[in-house]
Each structure stands twice: as structure tokens, then as C-alpha cells.
Image (cartoon, rainbow, N blue to C red; front, side, top):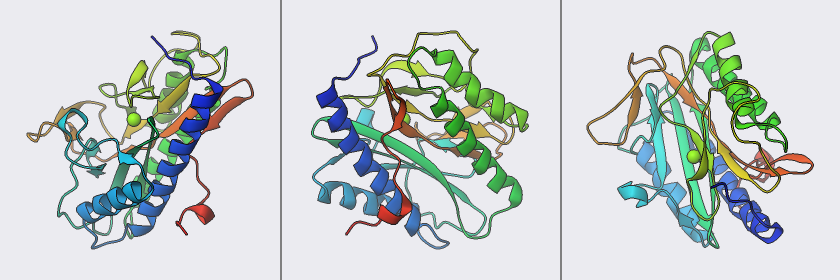
Length: 256
Ligand code: MG
């Protein structure tokens, strides 16, 4: 069942969305060759707790960290580690916060140092996929319109979209109905209504869409070892169209 949010609940989701957006914007500024993904995790947890919120991922189904840290061929759910980011890596940071009982969820993929043009383009197109998907987050559209927006743009650029992991409704719980695939057909699937809140998260691969999970039980990688990019926003559907709750302008990113 898709849970619509009241005005008051939407206000709370704006607050959790704004906070997690600020956290992610801050984490971006830390990314440079030599920093470990664990250091980024520590910074995330501190900023979240200092704001009076909880890192939603930590302990979620036993996930041990505050961010998912997925480098290069890792698609999602990577563990932060003592791995030092290096020139040419692409680094996906996914982070969630729970503030006053409501969850915000956002992700981005950051180029580390000097990155090859094919990887930069993969990130750029994945971002464009998300923007196109957000345009579909309007009352009267269908879930298939969101998936199609992602799939059509990714495949037009010669990439594949991950099938095995999807976006989701979000609210008091991080994962609510519906599942939001990054593929689909226009006009199919449940109708989108005002008051729904979705976490839309394209995962786009340079090569095959096939995935496998590492022996840690969490880290998802591409079957062919080629890089993958991942971006995510939490979006409220309103009568006026999509409201991106996790969007933060860079200028306001660094906490006072
Ligand atoms: Mg998510």
C-alpha cells in the first residue's frame, strides 16, 4: 500500500530531506585522492548526530555503517573501509537520515581527482536520467513513466540500467511501497498521486546490467567489472509537480 503524506508529515519530510541533502553536499567536499571511504562515513555520522538525527542505514537489516560507499564497479550497498580513494575513481555515496521520525534518502556519484571522460559521461548521463525521472513525478503520471524516463535515456547513451535494485516509497520507514524500477513502459503501473513521496535512484552501468553480491553479503558489483553510477533524490509529489526534498544549493551546503 502506498502511504500518502499529510501536510504536516510533508513538512517533517522537508526537514529530513534538507538535512540529508546538506550532509551529502558536505561529504562531496571531502572527496579527494587519499581520503578513505571510512573517513567519509565517520564525517557523515557525526554531522547527522550533531543535527539531532539518526543515520538511518546504521543497523538497517544489520548494515553496519552510516553511508553506503560504492567505488567504481560497486553499484550500491558498499561498505566504507580503509580503502584510500585515488585519482580516476568514481565514488557513490548513499546516505539516509531519520529526523523526528521521518526519513530522507539521497545519493550521488563523485569523480575523484582526474577521471576519464567515459566515466565522467556515465555520471553526467545518470544525473540526467534522474532529472528526467523527476519530471515524471506528477499527479496523473504512472510509475512506468519514471522507469521509462531513466531507461530510455541510459540506453540511448549505450548504457544499461540495473534491474535487481530499485527506488522506493519513503516516509516513516526508509523502504515503503511502491518499488520504483529504473525501467518500465510509459503509462503502465500505479497512478502517481499528490502526497506520495518517492526515493528515485537510477543505477546506470557502463556495461552489462547484470549484478552480483560480494561475500560480505551487501556490496553489489557489476558482473563484468565495468563502472556503475548511482544518484538519488527524495521527491514529494505535489499538485504543483515534483518537489525535490533533498536538493541543496552548494552555497548552503557547508554547515555554519
Ligand atoms: Mg534509496
